[in-house]
Image (cartoon, rainbow, N blue to C red; front, top):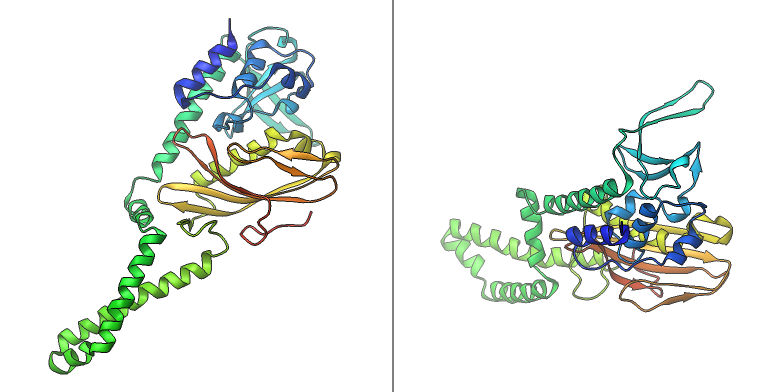
Length: 346
């Protein structure tokens, strides 16, 4: 069976487009297992490391495929762990084992109990997992589009920076007319009710420019260009957390030497800013690293960033999820020292 074509078809069906493949040589170099089932290796080749989807967050990196207590963990989620028995690694499409119990003995020893139904094999389970992960991500993207408060919050995205500027100019002109004409004082003297409404209207008009000035004060070090229209959102927002997780996996899968081999350098990703613009969520973070050797960082759609050995490199990133649920880089800058999050010394 052509497992690579099988997985690529499953990915294309739910995500659309193409996933750049990982080469067989790269997988062999990164994976420490002597024998890898063909169905498992084909999955990593089909997913690659450039287009990151939810599936990448459920699998261990090739470097993390190793045998522990005669088991190789191949998929881990919040509610389930799947593994392959060491003796089944020689099969092309082995039967999967699922963890049924985990307990800790009095002496501190962890006991993991696995079982199987005798029929569930790796290829079918992973294809189903691809479809399920894409479905859950799509549902997550829809949750921020429905509901009264989401509708109200999303409506603010139509007030772009340009429209806000034009609105402020119009309001300032109206305020000048109000002040010069003295219409409020005239109405108060002759028609007290209308005069009270005019004063209230004057206060509302004044509040809009004050709000705009306050917004600039809080966002000047977050916006990445003059037309940027993002606003802060909750750090616990589920769609933001999914974007954060996929961003982290991109960094890990593309530079595993920094994340899994500590002697190669020091690395930290600081995603302390959660943003939104309507139903879209953005993760703005800073990627700080120091390596023992010269190297380069690659981000889709952006120029290569090169760094020198023993010298800290700090890259400001902004990411989001596209309509298919895959990671998309919106901003990459290794010379930005003043926007949030701030640069950290490693």
